[in-house]
Length: 387
View 1: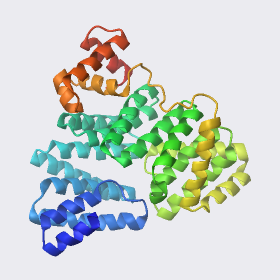
View 2 (view 1 turned 135 degrees about the horizontal axis):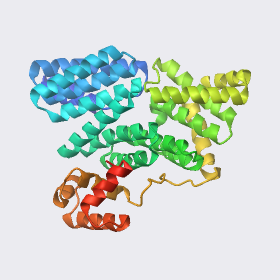
View 3 (view 1 turned 120 degrees about the vertical axis):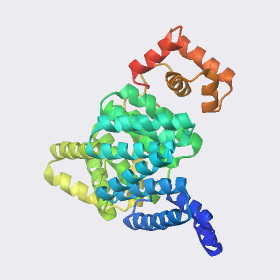
View 4 (view 1 turned 30 degrees about the vertical axis):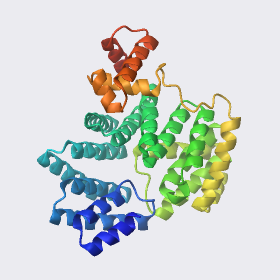
């Protein structure tokens, strides 16, 4: 439908409508093929030029930010950096804090690529703070997802769960399928870090049941990397090697790399473990079989694997990994906003709840934590890494 809108606005010479349609077309990453990335770059470049000519500052900043992500996914890091810098200059000159938050997200992603987890966390936390102040729940969920990744990679699994679970719930509530998928995958990674094959498989079952991975080969490849680790932990080294090979084959055909350093490190560790378990010859044979799979074939094999693994793996196959505290996802959201200094009325407005409901949540938080004040609850949140 948006493609049709682009053509209609073009015929009418409605430049503002055309810019708006192109901005909507550009939201989120492409399906993953190199052709799709190039097509999105062309479309965004046209939209950016129209924005410069006809004046649409917010959409210009949005499209510049999305264009930087596309160049990053294509491996053109230098070009992506220049665009991020331009968005930041543009946002600060215009006094647009939303664009500044968008820039922080871009810098967080770039820091994850280089492995600078301290910078990645700092930038993601700043983006999260700004989005929350603006009441932008959709973009806040993506920033919180980044914070959760940083916590997981640094080994703070409780803090990771405290961020990733709310990110998933908010993504579902706001209809952000990209953040929903990535949060599910990251929660599976979190379970793998805790050697909980059942929970990891349960998370991945949701990925393969609910989302159309065959339409997004890049995302499918990242999921296959995770499944390789799950299969390895469950003692199925041969299946793990097939999944790893299938992921390699997709990345090769897309001509795109694994971007983030922790993903590259995890891939290398898995490959080394499988070579040791299988022997080099058998490892090469099985990964070669995986490489030969199409995306649809690999997704079908993955779907069958997680369904069995989730029902037969030892240990709990809980839909959520334990967060390290007794609070619900909504209570964590309320506590996070309490830590930001918001009153009950302000929290109610931010979360689209009634003041009475927020008061009930605050009372429940204090009761569950056996505390008597908001200050003590905030101190708990800081110690637990929730904020």
